[in-house]
Image (tube, rainbow, N blue to C red):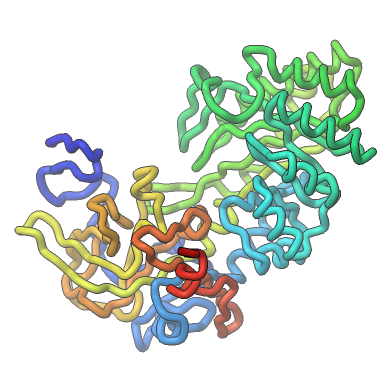
Length: 463
């Protein structure tokens, strides 16, 4: 392999075999169920993909492409599965994955809590009708105005992240005469990615109070000694796209060890514990996510065992799934513009979106799947790369996927698993307006976030 100065995505891979886990499909039209929202299927007569009974050709005709297609029934079911699995624990939907007022209203109806990390997300949460007491506020650099708004609104808990923030929030509390409820974000020295965790060298990051260095313990002692803020518990978040509970086990052991120290030194047994989120989803056939019930069983067992060993009462548990709820509930619908065979090395399928609506492949080397959505094909599969329209060689959406050999301009192409961190991280690179989010339920579609227009872009340009 020849290295490339712009990174591995641009390297000469010496052929078009694709990754070892990608297998040539027996049926290029088949949908892998784990990758798609629950109501998605192919129509037996037309061959087109339908979602909640609505043909994607109709969606494209009515709403245009590219567009994020949101399966409301699937999202609701995932909310319910997490809530039921974790029983008496609080399930905080992580708003950073994707938030809109329509999403907030569904969360309210389904009885979930909501975690936000900026003033903008807080504004959407309140506009959507989330009761403030069911809100949590995160972030490593919350401004004084963000903290003040949270306190004024009555946000249920604020996860403090630095001594500067403790000082800011303490001043706000004294000035307003209110007593904000807080949790301390603890950096426990565990980083989990998929099936592996590494328990060293992860204190060097911007989030949280270090456990190893003693900062987390000092933060708890300061808050308790000053008595201005109400310390409710400790918070840990160990990573993203986690497929098993091994990392959580190490994290829980360490954070509950800190809980025991605080109890011993300060005489206070903190009533709450948040183990964060990061639960993985299937983006491709190589991914095998755990069921919510299995995750809940493992996490609750781990906490109970550690508390028993440390002679602590079991705290009230909370978790923060975001990706695991919204990620699989959405796919992105594109239209193919060009198909280009490059000297027999690779077939490039260019669509009318790109890195402005999904930066994750370029940013994280993330892997995605794709399928021709508006029809079926009897042609054999070919290995292709799905790319966007932006002026950037790294504008890649799907690095390797088998598509029918007759994929052509005008085809609709669907990329599943785009509910999390795609619309949230979307940009206007090359001055491309961001796509809409179209919710589909009970045989009808509706726009919940409208498509941006050139007028929107120009309205911000004051000359």
